[in-house]
Length: 487
Image (cartoon, rainbow, N blue to C red; front, side, top):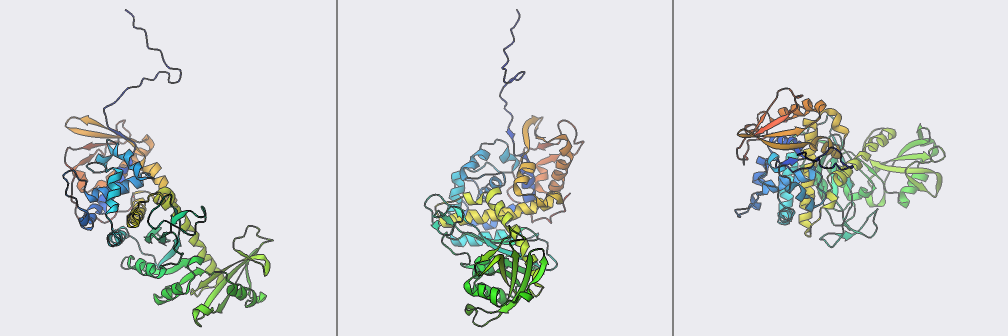
């Protein structure tokens, strides 16, 4: 008797749909991040920091695993606490990441809810120092960029108040303050503030605390900040620490008079078409007689119609920008040195768009601050991962590119005799590079006893593959290893 073939769908010709019992994940590339965490000894460093968060339930997830899961979720693109459910439902991802199971969103919320201000400060300081431990010094010192941003909030939360909001006026927000190491693209320190806080509110204490985060043998060669930080108390703090600075001046009536009447036309030095610079030593009433240097940048609108800067009614046809500085270089060089500060806006975009730190908010202000600061620590860890594991050409790429091109790798798990085999869905032309990254990170680590790398021909159909031995996940690790150069 002839069996009539099943009719084929015109939408999916020659396709048959079925179920599989093999665990499958699309985030298998995150194993590289786990190996990097093992390489720097992150788990061993977290254990003493989170002793106060230990639980007594038999079904508890250790606090170290909760924090690691929080970092993995951010690195893989979670934008809400509820998005952690997608990784909790992944049958293979927790095993690749060395976690007994992925915590639920409520578990992560309760974890941060246990943070007080003292816990948040102590843990974030220790983690920030750990994330900066492998930082390479610069010859002339690091350039420290200070900036603030706005996290819009929807709902009633502690510290979520109406303040300066350039996008959504009148919307409650939080007002973080951040300090960047420009050349190394690292976050030196960050803190969360209430939405109605001014830009320079608490900046003296913030600067003092940020300088304690700097590793031994490093120094600050220059501090740059915008007009929001142009306050006398901040100038005094910088000069007390003997830090050179370039800060944009607020164009108050006194400063406008200074630019227009104290600088003769002959003192303006042309730099290029439509741009001229000048400098002058002067004082303001709030400075109590202390003289500081003003560097002025003037652009002609007829020659540069899109020029940035402030237009003055008293002097039409030009835009002005004024800096207060202690740098003893020529005025043109001072303006060029400050121009590089614009890159810190791209770093803030990575915090808000790539790690989505502006979307995680809890009822308690200390809990929200803890989530924000631990997310900033992850930013530094991902910068170290990029420098250690990926080629130097990745330095200019954003974190979302690392997630989409490195972490987004399909894999399945199948039985293989008495072991389990993890097969990565890596294109043939990328397999040798992926395999080399695995080999470089796994060599000499405790995870090597759990995973056996097949370093045979990477172009074989089932390569690269990983044999997962049936051994328990280790709970303690040795001291941190020295990071190795990128392959």
